[in-house]
Image (cartoon, rainbow, N blue to C red; front, side, top):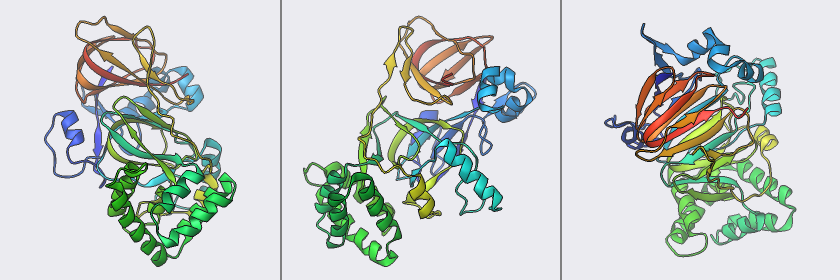
Length: 397
């Protein structure tokens, strides 16, 4: 097993303090948005193996079956199929969806055939993989996830009392669910920019006022007003009002499958995803929004967010159950003096300590303090002891 040295990405929406507090380091004065743990080519973790620092991606490439296991290589190829992150949002991320595997393969092949450079700003598909993800809150964590019921979305929009929103309200009441949601989202994203900017301005002012009251949608209105302050005039603000607002408490999680529109708004969490960069944006971003492709990918179905809570087994492992083979996220909450926990696995593991301090014992021993992480190669049996909380990322299969 090896301690990981990880890259922190300074995206503009990141918190100035949350990741430094986790790591016990002083703030740099710039946003620190995501700490990446894994072998993603954009920022692979590094290992110290005696002769100097080496990228985890290079270690895996040198002997995939040893590091990942033969089963993982057969299933996913000679690469780590998941990426683990600590995500620290101080302002809203873009409103987005991810394709399913078939859509990703089709979209990637099409853009490759058309010669669209992989780093082009209008490129949608950076790879041929899907990007399901799971976010688990370390602090109270606000987000948007999935479409509201159309009648509920209509009531929320009507409550703003903005005349230019009334056509959307009528559509949401009059059409079958999938048609209503598709028609309103299409209308919002293709509207005249000046006209929709004025609608957003009026809606934001109303949301600010209603968010300060005690109505049934007050927390959601307050969140939408905050979004509008960060993205004034952006049509994505109205699109966001079609989505469920949710606050996760520490330890709770959300699974985000293909086609589900979502955005993270505020908070610190542990995120795990399939190793992909495929994102279709709906708004709340200066980046490219490909409306026709977005509408092809989005699932126009209303669904209340299914908040996940970990299920503990007799070994003390608390598992967040998801329908994905590429990753499996669980945690161990260890009290002082607790019996060692055994972490058997036929595949690779990344272990992240988020509280206290723990010891890992396998072929050797490694201590992890808060914010530190380790990579464990396939087949190495590890036990964990100490007093702290450890997240474990591995494969389902």
